[in-house]
Length: 332
Image (cartoon, rainbow, N blue to C red; front, side, top):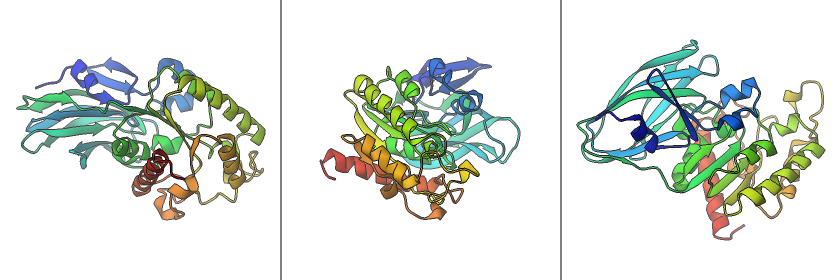
């Protein structure tokens, strides 16, 4: 069975639009209108496949496909992940190659019987696929969760620092909460009322906002509070029925300094004070304390500083999920 483009799209979550060129299908998590809000560098990062997942059940004896990745960063690993029945099975993509684009063929033998197959697209580059073949298959059933979560955030939400796309905290949140995730995280973003407003037409049963670490060194306290005031209006107007969670900045190794600001003080002031400002401004919302959900251990960061690695991201998602469950039970 060679899947048609419509069959492929029917099993994909996390994408809000598609493109097709040279037989490859590309998956985008931002609308063209939303992408116009980004400058050139941010716009390129926004084309990555963070939390875009092809999710289906099949009795195929093997899966094969052609892939192509257009990188946004130099060097490193740019991977797609294959999971079977919720367990990581394999990866395919670019490994340490500094070329701007890579392509290849991937094939994997599947166990006998009907199994759930998930392909997580690369979270830090544009990943495209074509010619998906399910050998000896008589069953193909999309298995994407019905409930949806919108994850707003910066590089940590997008998954920078995490090697495997299935292990970013947002992707794991989707698995633990059994929701489809549309990941609106982009490296370098701050609280952004304009982007949230542009996302207002998208269905969301749950919405998370995880900003602040970039705000610390790029805007004044007054500007931060003014932006949050706009965001609260949009949350009330456009996401009335959704569960809303504000995730404050995580512990970071430089939280008592401001290296991103070079030779000047952070305009937002002290990092801890900024975090308290965010909590205060979102009083009445479900606020998840970033200092409580990530270990105060630099080894859980891939860069020993700011971005969680694979294991750190898994721990982060587990602890955020626990906080969400506590909130649902009315616990503090």
